[in-house]
Length: 357
Image 1 (spheres, rainbow, N blue to C red):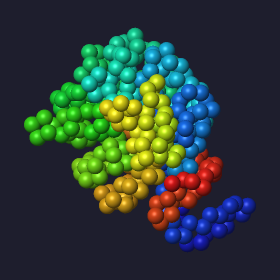
Image 2 (image 1 turned 90 degrees about the vertical axis):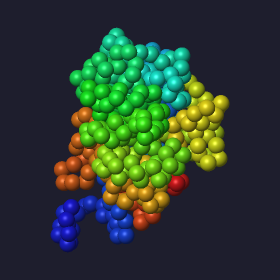
Image 3 (image 1 turned 180 degrees about the horizontal axis):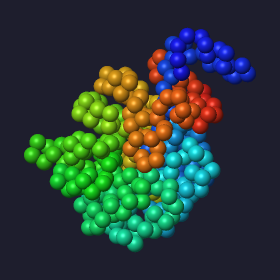
Image 4 (image 1 turned 30 degrees about the horizontal axis):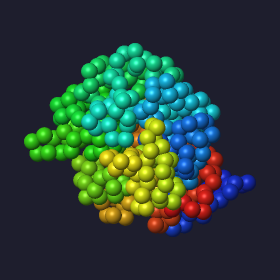
């Protein structure tokens, strides 16, 4: 990095990319993604294929999210992601979204598969992940939740408060116990009321908490997106929460945690019965573009929210999210309209398909 033309003496035998008129940004880090390109967490090939699709949209490091399923299946999926992480450093590990969720705020998660975060189950999860569990989402009002938070934090896992019916005080207690993430803010939880502030306000008042946000125009209104960025400067992390339908033409039926998800013509993913949003069809570049082009977030803040902020939210990932000298070689070259021109992930050029919109 630098100015002038002294760089030329270091480029013998190198490929030079002319980025005039473009923006070079840190590679995006998606800390919450279930699938894409028609694939989800089923086997190593499926994981590789959906993450390859997301890399074409600027995501250079990913945390693979595992939705609520029968417990044996969730443990197998944790082991699957652990193997993928060992083979591919661009896969940072797993995010367990369930089964420790509130039944009333479960969203697209099956009610009959939800569990209390008892010590035995927590230990099973940690053993299956073998040190690759990066994040777990839980409802702090559940019996045993506070002890589970402490256990996960001691194991180096970031705990997210989410899919919860808790009030402000309970969320604040969870953050005091060591939870440091609010899972997809506003979705799967009580909103802000002037006499019942809820978990979003608790997260805003806890300076160590990172607030995930799905910026697709459906999960959270653009005006509220702007308010959250203003109220939690440097603490909002853009996520996709993408399902298998991400990166495909709108329409189609997919599965998440064994439930059928219908994607309509506008790309909105819903449970078949229409009772809940079920993840998104978002990609990280689209999230950045929408945040900026709607005028709700400035470019610098949006790019930080897609890179450095999520990297700092995860234990052991602080080296990612920047293009400072000495940092991992993850970068995305964006055109002036914030579409992706080129991606470098772990030093390698990612293949960019022609249909990246």
